Amino acid sequence: MKMLKWWLVGALFVCLVGCEKYVVSLMPLCPDESSVAVPGLEGKWACEGQVWTIRVKEDTSYEMRVADAMDTARFDGRCRRLGDHLYVELRPISESEASPVPSLYDAHWVQACSFMQVQLQGDVLRLKRLNAETLKGTLEEKPGLIKHVFQGDNVVLVDETEPLARFVQAQADVNELWQEQGEFVRCQPLYRIEDLIQGRDLMGQWQDPNDKEHGHIEVTSEGNHIAIQFSNDSDENLIFSGHLFKLQGLRFKGVFLGPEEIRAREMATLMPDWFALVTLKEDRLDLNVLDYMTIKELLAHPEQVQEDLSKPDVEMIRVRP
Image (cartoon, rainbow, N blue to C red; front, top):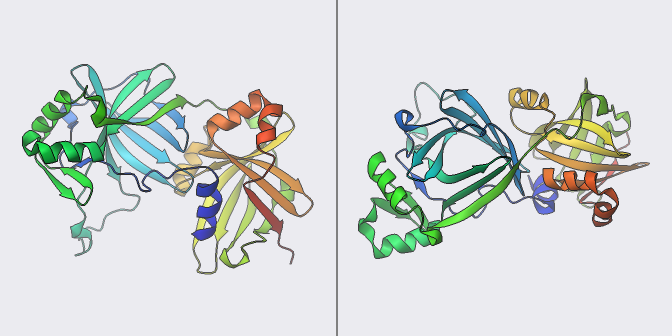
């Protein structure tokens, strides 16, 4: 959706997939029998551009929900220790139930997984993944290191689990083969139920005055939260849930992404996927899009950070009947 991408992705975030290249494997690095539980891994973790929500499913299985400004993706997570290093593996979870009789189209999709090195120190989580470009060059020089195929610039590992594990362990300390996925900090609620406000003056329809062709926002009230629907002339729409809250005299919107049942669950944590500083001047609505670390800094040093937010990321005008 042109409007939404321009506002949110352009304003703040880099999408998870974007133009990034990832190394994937057809076979798991962390099979169920080798997976381990990791104390302290569960929680919500924020890095610039991404938020990871990690929940224990059962025993050594985790649900990992990765959010950027646009959407969320859910993964089944497993962890495994190889030598001195800990790894997490991500296996995608479909948001829709698979058909009992796969279509010809469905049959062409084969599930792959990816994995990352994990360093967990208290409230800091560091993730590193294989560098696809460097690994491609290495395998072109030494094709016998592990079974693989190239799909353009992408590397797909096709070896069995144990040869894959031996390869990863042997390359664990080859620094040029690994790149930072991010350094994440553990999220804590920044507001309380008592800080929620109704925000009736925000209800209704809003339009970007410079891009009237590509849609509008409709804000409605749903109990102690709001619903935000983005739509455009091609009938595309995307629904978010949000909390309005007030801290230190400033009004914020906390936004939760994903399917309805996931949004409802996450709203109970009071830890949104992203935030916006809300300024309303008569029929004009200004929004500054914020990630967790920026809003935390804003609350700690409001005068200093507000100077950097003098120009809004999004400017809207109210649509009058």
